[in-house]
Image (cartoon, rainbow, N blue to C red; front, side, top):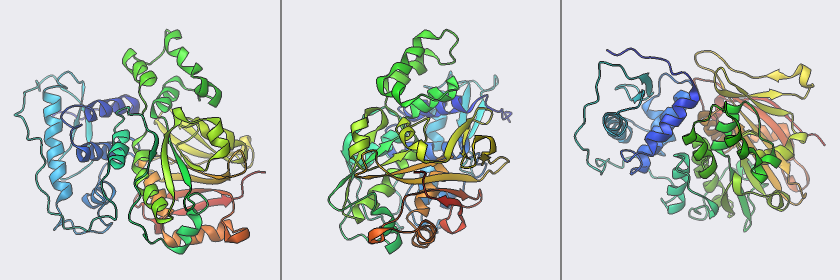
Length: 431
């Protein structure tokens, strides 16, 4: 049996996953792409060694959290097909890949290993383009698959498609939300009004991680940071990666995955949402609009103007290739670092609700340690009991509106359920 070898950097695995997801073996099936990206994200970002069928069914295929896996085989069917497609890719188109992605049987956590010399690639027989039929035993969600939904998943696959003022699909009117959830989100989504959902820039995050620095908003806005791609002789960026950084519009899987929950919440409040890519946003939008900013200051520079009011910063650990929150409320010298380590680290997410730069609208800023944590944060912020408890900590103002705040949430490694989350702290923003 081939020896499992550690991969040198997290970034190399991300680039490999992106390459495989865009191959002809995976890219033709939205569900297979989504499944591959979710599973790899859980391993690369969260360090998961074991991923259960029920989690995949809920997070990827929209099944209820505790659905009956014995009677609904959607995960097993797609995992089997994905396993075969990966084998075919690495035997044919990816025959020269040094690292191989394998999906072991009995566990949905992918394995990244180096190709050994004693396993020459053998072409596999062609696979049918259509997936096997799956019995639709679980109840469907209250929305239809539309071009907007398909494009959101294409973003997750980093295909580089441009999204500009793309309207969310609005689900059937009358969708119910718990009172506390409706109260919380009404500050962001208002009936008949449009809210910007600003996706983070995955290419910028990768550039910052490789270069070891944060790109300022001014550099990002005038694209001056891109000049260093040609000027630095000792850069760690390959020519292929440079091209991707300049030409492609890419967002992280976690942000694209969150669009589903945001679209349903907006529809329930009879509001509209437009998907905006960070590279296409502007200072005028930041002053006049209301919106949701996804990512952190390294992946979404439009968060930078709000940081003077916030005490949470997100730092990058190059040794583990992970982001973690830092609380500087007591000063940088006494900053509290929430850097979870170990075999199964906890997940963290920061939530901030602040006025826009013009004072005539609001922004919600959502950052997290990874895709699993941001998914848990979305579940927390749409759970009636959890949001009710959070509002009690925040307080309300005139008209029973939720006050401005920033909070840090912690999710234990063994559970991403709202009831198991902890509000580490919740406070008013700085003046």
